[in-house]
Amino acid sequence: MQKRIAARVLALIIYIISSSYLPLDAKQNISLGIDNLIKSNFEYLARKRVILYTNQSGRNSEGKLTAEIFAKQTSFSTVAFFTPEHGIYSTVPAGEEVKNDNIFGVPIISLYGTSKKPIAKQLENCDALVVDIQDIGVRSYTYISTLFYIMEACAEQNVELVILDRPNPIGGMIIDGNIIKDGFKSFIGVASVPYLHGCTIAELANLINEEGWLKKDGKTIKAKIHTIKMSGWKRWMSWEDTGLSWIPTSPHIPSVDAARGYATLGFLGELGIISIGIGTTLPFQYIGSPNFSTEKVIKELEKTKIEGLSLLQTRYRPFYAKNANSDCDGLLLRFKLSNHFEPYSAGFKIIYAIRKVHPELFNIGTLSENAKQMFCKATGTDELLDALFDMKTTEEKLLQLCNKGKKEFIAKRAKYLIYD
Image 1 (tube, rainbow, N blue to C red):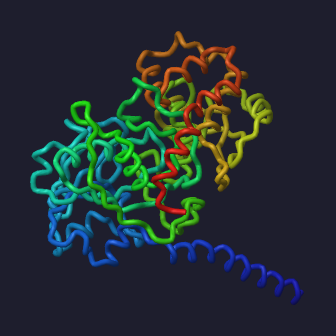
Image 2: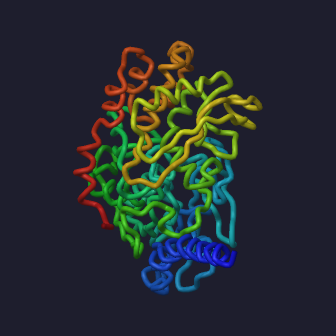
């Protein structure tokens, strides 16, 4: 009896040590850009008039809002905050206009309202425009689109851009997806990068700047960029490896697994043919419908390998959005930490298996023009729409299309990587 008790106590001690050591160790070794700015006593911003592009995801590693930190500083003055889609507290639903506001005695200027780009007058009394916002590493997520327009405005008005760098939560080694086809750029795809680019926000900004993608009257312009790097972050790290707490970046990204789910299923939601878990407590982590043949779909998916993802048979009920208040049979996506995970390609493997079992969902004549346009904007091409709804298209061909241009981007990206 005593031996059994001793064994259980030892097992508990080992569990406590093993479960707490890694995140604590990681947290001690990672400093965000904002942390390093604070450590320098804000030296780089001293005596400057500053605008901060941020929302509630912009926080130091202890969880304090960068907006509050800036508002209370006396070594420089914060004249305004710019905020993107979803607003300063990330509560405004997707696509809904964000109003101007005020926080900590500083005006909030919406860049998701009457204008998505700062106008010259807003930058008149600004010496530096600082960026501290948590991106999710997916091209169609609009925080990068807003940054792109901010960069253009800074280049036009000769305002320095200071980027407080943050981790790519999906990781710095995962690159997946096609490059945007000519003629398909939009606010959910402004830069010629794959669907998952594997860059931090600073790396991506420098790539955009140096590759000549900023334009004015058809001519290339450049922003003056200063990066305040992270310390301790490595490309192989997932979000969990950082030891940082996840702050919801938007209403449907309440967790880092929701970000992974968005990378996997988000573009499929544009079609409106199947539920992807919007309206549940696990957005982008379910896929199904009331008449979904789950077992047959799973059997089809057993024919293909999806690294870093397991798919479990389940039933769920959305409270709103597609199939609201109806029980859906379907799949629950469970993510495993792997730098070989390719979310975008995995999404096409899943939808290909669903097409094999439910061909009735893939009648392009039933799609609205808006659904077609949004899917093409999200994927950056019309080729994938045509291929997906052509029943003769093989999985191999679909995967070739959804990774078109990736190899060329990987070679281009190498010049702009800040971290090993």
